[in-house]
Image 1 (cartoon, rainbow, N blue to C red):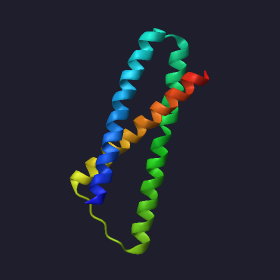
Image 2 (image 1 turned 30 degrees about the vertical axis):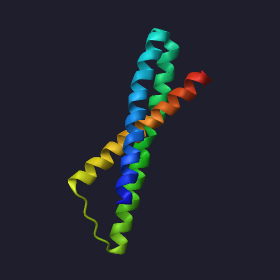
Image 3 (image 1 turned 135 degrees about the horizontal axis):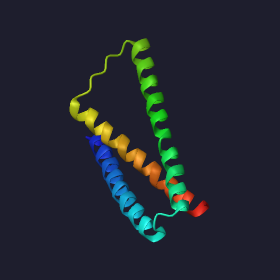
Amino acid sequence: MNDQIIILLFLLIGTAATLFLYIWKAKKHMEYRGDERWEAVQNKANCTANCSHYILLLLLAVVDMVTLHSHVQMTFTLNRVMTIAVLYVAFRNILELSALLYYDRRL
């Protein structure tokens, strides 16, 4: 039961961050009127957020190595896999939001 509460908490945080990301990006786009500086900030933040793909591949490789060498059999339900996928998208959006906030102040 505790793991469901933790997953729910992460889902709520990820949903709030995703909504804030899209609202904040729209506000900044209107504020900067799509100038080149804002495009550069978005490109750098997108490159930073795309690093999450490498993190995902590394985690999948580690899980694969653990299951191959320890003879542990893990089964996942489709519901759990979809929840993990939503959490991954939320993590990527949080990463993009933090990169946008950083690069907007920095550049």
